[in-house]
Image (cartoon, rainbow, N blue to C red):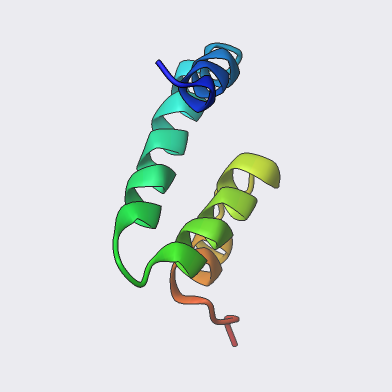
Length: 67
């Protein structure tokens, strides 16, 4: 186990089950080519701002403001 793996394990054990699932989902999105911006927006919206509104998720996924 690398030092990074140990840090990730320590961090994830402090998270709720929901937050761990969402974190893994965002990591999977980030692993896909061309989706790093989307994963960054999802992380900000979901994990940091805790905004699960339709408008916020649409902005995170598509990077556009609703009119």
